Amino acid sequence: MKRIEAQQAHAALAMGRHDDRARADFAFTLRNHVTSRWMPATRTVFDHRAADEFARAHGRRPQSPQEIRTAMDADPWYRFYLSARRASQEAIWAAVIPPAEQLGRMEMPSAPRGALRLDPSVEAPAYVGAIDIHCMPGGYLADRGEGDTAAGAVYDRGVYLYMSGLMGPLNDGVGQLTVQFLKARMPDFAPRRILDMGCGVGHATLPWKAAWPEAEVIGIDVGAALLRHAHLRAESLGVAVAFVQANAEATGLEGDTFDLVTSSIVLHETSARGLPAILAECHRLLRPGGVMCHVDQPRFEDDDPWATFLQENETHYNNEPFWRRYRRLDLEAEARAAGFGEVELATLAADVVRQSQNNAPDDPRARARGFLALLAVKHG
Amino acid sequence: MAEPEGSPPLPPLPRRARGARPAFHDEPAVDRLIAMFVALASEVSVLADRVATLEQLTGIGHEQVDAHVPDLAERTWRETRREALVARVFAALDDEPGTLAGGQRPEDYWETIAKIERGEV
Image (cartoon, rainbow over all chains, first blue to last red; front, side):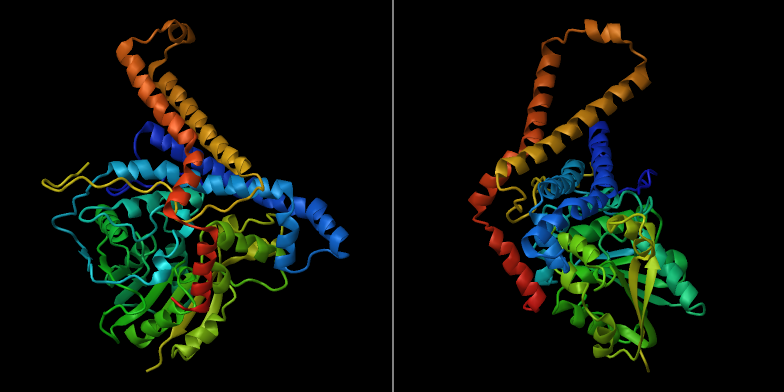
């Protein structure tokens, strides 16, 4: 599953020259080949060989995600698949890093509509920088100082290629999905002040400004180079957003001042300690009646051990440290523990989720999968 | 591109994720070969695109291409380009020496996962 439409140009985007673009096109093709052809084939290998081999040794077929892993790890095709899949991930970064490096120091706009507020004293939580998440060399925190946007430029292109273009030309599919969900679920809601936590390069931040043009929209992240890129990108696209360097666990922003605090595919990159702190900070920041809405990967389903096994590979082989633990959390209980009284969970189905979890394209359960929205209201 | 005056040039970006790369095969050479093959396929694809671009833009035929002999300047430029190609295709061989030199072990990764899952960080 893929979308060929080119990524939308903007002043911060590092496309490089002909061969850089061709190299990225190849990484795109290979990535889609991995998810659309090889990933479904893992199930064939399991059904027709690996499960039988396991049964011969253990007297029964594998039941749990761990037993499926034991069975698959012994299979030669599967090992080759894992190795090639890892190489395909590295091919994405190998394609997009050189053009980002060629950018050099970028000049920030002199008369911006929005704002960029960097604060070198902000300390990033250890989980952000402990591992280069998604195997992106340098990680989110790489910062070479004034004018450096490379971490953002690399991420912006990398996400587009990794998601097979399914996030759309502006990589804003998740933000758009969340806006549509909230507008449908709460038709009378009209937030005046919106905070997007872990905004990265602002992919999911800009849709909030488009949805409520009168609202003040602030995006926070700990990565300075991500935020420079986000600022340059938003200004180039003509969207007035303030990007602020801050830690979502303790933003330093004034409490009781936001109508909406949100995040898009961020919580699974925190930690068992960080996540409750972030939810508590959301509660502190919201006005009474204010809304918290986080959208991220869905919970693992106990009765689908195959899907859990495949998804846990992200922690094993693609530097997703909190992924497998996050997807077993009771988010409703976490939100209540943070002080929220009214809490609900909703599934937002989308192509982009099916692509990244494309383990059985003809399985109706796989088709129904989507992001999980955690929606909560702060009582007065 | 847009270099503010007086600032020193930025250092190069890292090319590989930190930590030891997971092993998928008992014989490490297999993983290296797969990575090289992916890199090589990428280069072939880039070339095919470039040829297609040139044909589209110029309309030059096969006979002219066959008859062309590069002069010294062009030979020098092509050698530089091929050196870079070899470095990209065989980049997988750089991985292990880098890990060894950095003192990184595979178990460091799982110690970090455990800390994050236990909530120690």
